[in-house]
Image (cartoon, rainbow, N blue to C red):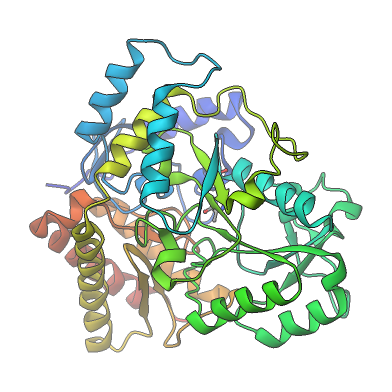
Length: 440
Ligand SMILES: *Cc1c(COP(=O)(O)O)cnc(C)c1O
């Protein structure tokens, strides 16, 4: 199984066709395979730990729709709940019991938020949380970190300015410089940088936003003391701390990174897993802060399809399967197993490689060092990834098409030791090819 033909002509033809309809042929840029070679796969079916493309090639999947599908593809309970709900209609633009049920289930099982609001994407969750932080503190500037991604929100598509410039510059055309200047960008893993910045600017800073598990630019696992420090310094300066848990929420534990590290931020954003594969995001926090959201408060936020019953049902059917305490233990243990197997092989072959991991997230890091900042990632190391990615496609393993993207283990694969072992052996072989053909 998974010994694929090299043939991907249907995907290639469909991609050519798609280029006429969508800029670059895609509806989200990283799907375009720009940083690896070849045309993106057109997937027609997913089942458990596998996806099947239009050319009938089947792959063991470590992308899982970029994270939402923690259970794997086409999960039976989610599918059946969605079909049942759909019989009553798709959306009413009114409150429904489905929204109440998902809200109650999350809040009953999460000590870090008292109230929440559902939106339809991670980007929307972050955008709304930032507005709430600004409205609540009556301050305008925000601090983010280099190497953290928070969706395509204007004020967060910003990188550090050059030289001594304190304020950010945008990383996309179409963002006014005046917006970017409201964002201060600091390096991760550097208490002093935060200290110095807040000493000068705390009177104008509304919030610090961080991915507590930065997983969009490699996997830059932070020190717990650093995250605890952020909490402490924010409290001292009347600055809100926002954990962007769109990836880490329900992934490193049901309570996400807040629970994993036992650190209480002021606001938390969610997305990805929370919708079980349908478009759902959310932001939540202390009641006292959340009450500033309209219609109770002055911070406006709305959504035509927010908390639509079908998406709420999918989210609930997904999250109910995660609440068992043994769930995350097994996911973490199997991810550790994968990482250790690969690291042992790399050591035997004297490859410079380590596998960063937390919960069921892993990242192949082509370096000996533990990497905590985006500046520490060597861009040349992506040459290995390119070969690795290509080899794995040929042998039936799908990784997200960029070396800066992390891998996600699904429950379906964690439960199938034989196929997990098969995927690991294919990864070892692909690494052998990569290290034989690339020298940097
Ligand atoms: C994916 C992601 C987002 C954006 O979510 P979308 O649903 O793609 O808008 C925001 N923050 C983090 C940390 C993410 O991983």
